[in-house]
Length: 234
Image (cartoon, rainbow, N blue to C red; front, side, top):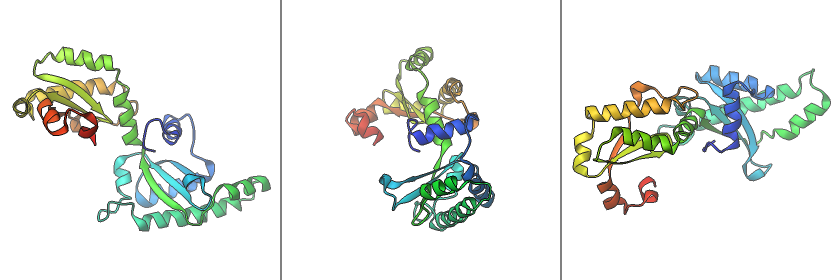
């Protein structure tokens, strides 16, 4: 789950909206993860790396970015190996128990056995909040961004540029950038953009007290990035 166009994001969004549910056989594992690690799991997605049955993987779709952080190793900045192993073992245990359930038909038990290979299972983590924020920001029509710039009506403001869940206001010069950075006008710009953004924030993830727009300059963009957006965001 990386982009708003990913099918994993779309399926998880339906769960968040209440239009769908997590797979029945995954419910015990989701509950176990939430209780053990004090997080909120929205979805669990099982598939195979490059469709190779020898490399099964399980995506833990958490709701919040802070929850995903609980599964990161602060030393290596990779996923926490011990927690990956704990979840993989629990998945294997619960899947086995579910397949033995008396109320399941033989056909369903066979399907479950074919669907979920647990040996060499790779567990990884994503969060819904980050992608939902990206979607909210990108859903603002360009026309409204232009209207906002017109409303600001500041000749020193070059352009308003969005990227993922952030926005950057570009002044023309570095000197102007210094003048506006952390000023009352900067705060006003942050509040104005937040008010616009909230109209598209379906799940209320953006918080006003922690929101601000970034500032930069055309001078910096031209001098240090050769006036190229690819280099700037690389």
